[in-house]
Structures are given as structure tokens and as C-alpha cells.
Image 1: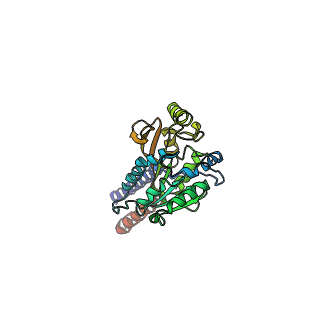
Image 2: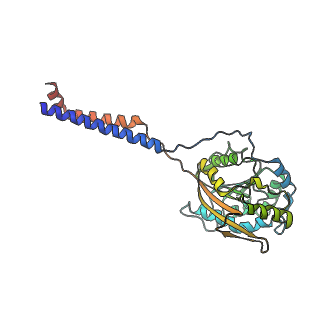
Length: 325
């Protein structure tokens, strides 16, 4: 009887110890679990710079002149379209020949006249292009009308990103902001909005200009003031952002940077090519973290252990009778 009593006592202590270990394991799991960060912002907090709107309004009729002001953007499609397409295809198991992006919803932010929106639509994607400049959207709508295939695949809206956030939360498989972030008024708010409308696991593609002395010398002094490759006042060096700064903002908003690649433009040939050097232009691909189920509550472990102890006790009624003696 004494032996049985001691044996049961040790058994209960061991089971309690196991229960405590399970509880501590749960607490450690809770510490390591990263809950999604939700940052507060106001939809009245605009990302649109009114001065930038004025600048681009005067150029709205030039978007589709392949030899004009926007010639470098036409040429950039040779890099950015495959960059977007190939990275998106990594997320799917199969695709339709000729329409590899079929079934995907893409948001083209700051779409301008639709230079990038149209080729993405031709790849089969359902694309919404938004721009705060009404004249840009009119130009994009007009040019889209020449291709009946794009009628059902592309939709244009004259609005800012923050204006459509509430109605499009976690809607898009991909967001494209090509040559845009160097023009926004509030980059932090802009990235927050991108994250909100992106599906878990979705991709954000950005092309922009690094904030370096070289980018000032070539991007502003040479390109705008000397060579006249782009109109004066198109860029503001203070708004340029380094890959490190951009990555920091993206990471703090739940986006993991997967790729950063340098881009170089040859003004004499009119072509772009990839480079390991990111001191001028660069492209970045980031992905939103997928939804993760939080750990089960502590009570789950405790209740499960209690039920197991009770089941063992009921399976050994003789032991209780011995203890009563």
C-alpha cells in the first residue's frame, strides 16, 4: 500500500512537471511569434505632392511619344516587364501560354499614361491603373481604346492610393510602383497603403532612384539641366531613397525584400541594362508575409493535460481504492 501510494505520488508529480514544461514551451512560442504590425494612419494624410501633379499635368500628352520626354520609360519596359513577370511566375505552379499572368490582380500605382499597365494586361493580368493626375488617366484611357484585348483587362482611375485603400484591402496579388516613390509626399504612408491592399504573400515591385552624389550629378544636373533628357524640375534629390532606407521601411511594414538589382541607362543608345551597381537606378521586389496562425491559448494545453490525467485515473480505479485504505 505504501509502495503504491509513493508510486502514484511520483506519477502525479511527473505529470505536473510535464504540464509545466508544456506551458513554458507555449510561452516561449508566444515570445517568438510575430504578430502582424498594424500601423495607424489617416486617409486624410495624402501621399500626393501638388507640385508634382502640376509638373506631370503639363506633360500628360507626351506619354506615348517613344522618342520624346518619356523615351527612357518606354525603354525601361525591356527590363521591368520581365522582372515583374518572372518573379510572379515563381509563385504559381502553372500558367496559360501567351497569358502567363492570367488570373492575377495587379495594381499599377502612378500609372501615368499606361506605359507599364498595358504590357501587364497583355500578359493576361487584370490590372487597375491609378494616377492622381486626371490628364494622365485620360491619355491612358484613350490609348487603351486602340487595343480591344485590353478593354476587359485594364481599368483606370484618377485617384491616389490612399483613396482606394478601404475598398481594396488585401485585394491584389501584386502592386507595381515604377518610378513613383521618388515623387510621393510621404513614403512611409505610401508603403503602409501598399501593404494594406496587398494579399498575404503578394508582391510589391518598385523601381526608383538611389540617393547618392552620383544620382544628383547624373539624374538632376546632367539629365535635367545639361542634356535635357527629362524636363527641369521632374525630380527632387531630397526625395530619392536608398535601397537600405527603402528596405527598412518595407520590413517595418511586414514586407520582406527578396531582390534588389541595379539598373543603368545609356542615353546614347537609349537602352537599359541590369547592373550590380545600385548607385543610380534600382529595382526592388518585396513580398508581404503570409497569414500565420497564432499559437493556441495556454488553456488548451492545460485542459488537454487535465483530461489526460483524468482519463488515466479513471482507467485505474483500483489505485484510488488502495489510497483510501
